[in-house]
Image 1 (cartoon, rainbow, N blue to C red):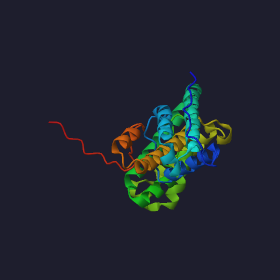
Image 2 (image 1 turned 180 degrees about the vertical axis):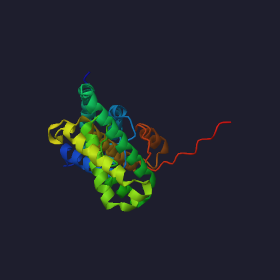
Image 3 (image 1 turned 30 degrees about the horizontal axis):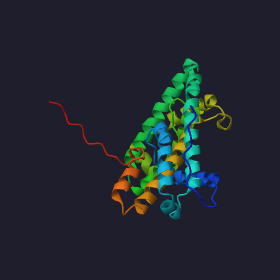
Image 4 (image 1 turned 30 degrees about the vertical axis):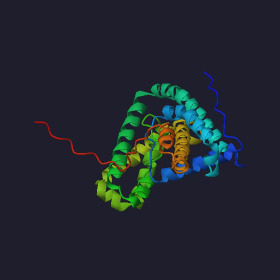
Length: 261
């Protein structure tokens, strides 16, 4: 069903919507450099945009002075439409994944499990601020779907390259030479079925980029609205409540599970 776009704040700056979108994508890329992962529902993010844009419209004068104008709002609405499009297209990709041969499916499952185990181990030993950069070298923050051969092949390739650079991480997680050889074999075999990434429409990667850019818009809105509405805490709380919740798990430590009697 077509959705009516909210009226955008009048007299936006000279910045175009495409420039604003590029700005948001760049901000999302910088967030990803710290291995920050999106932990919110992409559909909920897309559906929240209209209400946030209306809030920007309601405080156009204050927010425009602080740099949040109609161009950013138009870019956010476009990102929301892109997210909905990618979500609709992903079931078709899942159907194509189910027609793979049994051998290829088993290879993909083994490779995905291996890559995921290493990624989890790396995450546990790179919790410092410097560790965020190291984790990024290992591919944390990249799109990773265990059902996508290209994702798993890329994950293994990045892990193998990072292991050569960060020997201390290799020692910390306890990787043996035979473990590395196994990953090399899996990456080689998986490359044969992963296809050429340049010719594959990677809906999930595009979805992640659009969602990351939209979260950057929400961050800008929250930061600028917090300042612009500092003198009106009730209104500030109301507009900030429009933002969908996001769970940050990058440095979340789990409490030990209490043993049952």
